[in-house]
Amino acid sequence: MITVKEAAATFLTAKRVAVTGVSRKAEGHGSNIVYQRLRDRGYEVFAVNPNAETVEGDAAYPDLASIPGGVQAVVIGTKPATAEVTMRECADLGIDQVWMHRSIGGGSVSPAATEYGRAHGITVIDGGCPLMFDPTADTGHKCMRFVFSMSGAVPRHVS
View 1 (spheres, helix red, strand yellow):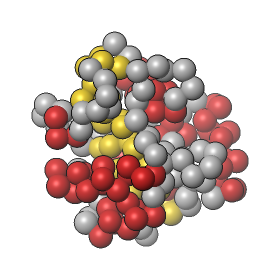
View 2 (cartoon, rainbow, N blue to C red; view 1 turned 45 degrees about the vertical axis):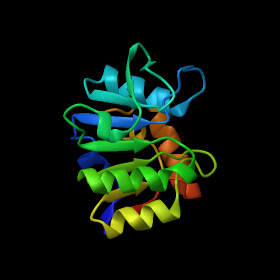
View 3 (tube, rainbow, N blue to C red; view 1 turned 90 degrees about the vertical axis):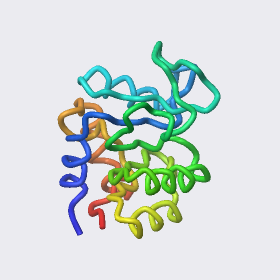
View 4 (spheres, one colour; view 1 turned 90 degrees about the horizontal axis):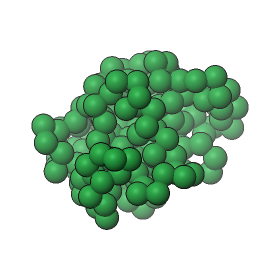
């Protein structure tokens, strides 16, 4: 078992990252915020939205398998009901780093997806946000990490 900080550090070494749940309308969508920040920090980031051809001015992809050259890590920002399908796709594609986004409420976390991913050798961070950890963090997200760690929305350990 490793700490979430250690898992986050490993996840954030990936340079090609897909973000699912990125919306055509950016206002108020957590996935869009994650997508923008990763892009602004120099990551090669790919938007996954089966209902869009472009997102944030970039090409969007209907699924992970459609991304040319693949990715090293995935941020799941969809409804929990969709997370297990995405986790299965990650396992099929050999993607071994997955982060299910969560701040207030359940977010994108799916216990079934977590269990499936871990059973298939995927390091699953089941809560919190990549923007809560360096090198992508800002002061606001670091404060949220502190608060959400107390409530359990950010896990302390990843197994």
